[in-house]
Image 1 (tube, rainbow, N blue to C red):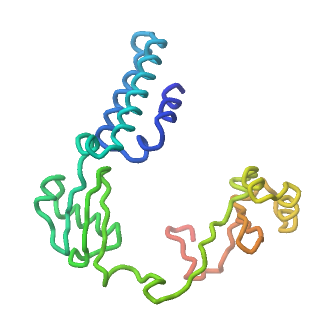
Image 2 (tube, rainbow, N blue to C red):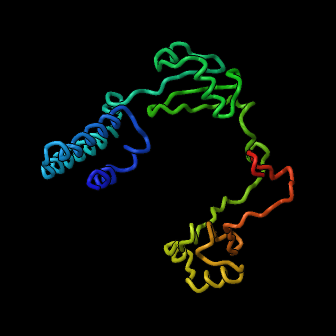
Image 3 (cartoon, rainbow, N blue to C red):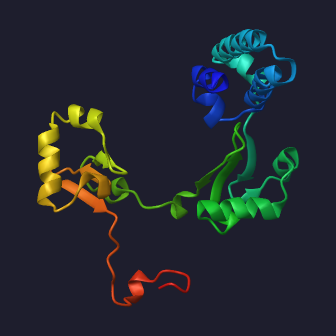
Length: 224
């Protein structure tokens, strides 16, 4: 529990974007927290863990300055430039060509000639920028005006009402329960209910609709 609280204090970065320094921090913190199991000194372990967290947060704050950042973190490594594989870059990150091609397929690209730039980022993730003629068409390319994207707001998830979203929308519980009742559903049976752009409530419940062997609704396996 103490370890979880310290990780929460650290912030999302150490968990979501693991650099080499972040991994080292997690390793050190884990060893400090596990000390009471061996020597039964909970107080010292908590104190040392707290000091470690503070030092880590201080160093991360200092790393926002570019000069220190280039010392602590690896620079991005170019793997493909203008359709040509960078052999030196692959050697630097110790990646065989077959693995690079696999990463490209995951990103939706099958031919290295279509790639303008592929880079291994500081976190180990590979980002791919296709050549302009191979990138997806954007509305701006066709000079189309599109409306602002609307994100459906969940009001019920896994049978539980999301009260803070109701409050955000200035809606009350009675309205939600009435909508659920009108749909012939019960809150506890609803997987997801979202507030739509048109002001309506969309409900996804647990019932699976049978489609009478429609090939468009094929499910893999023998239990069709």
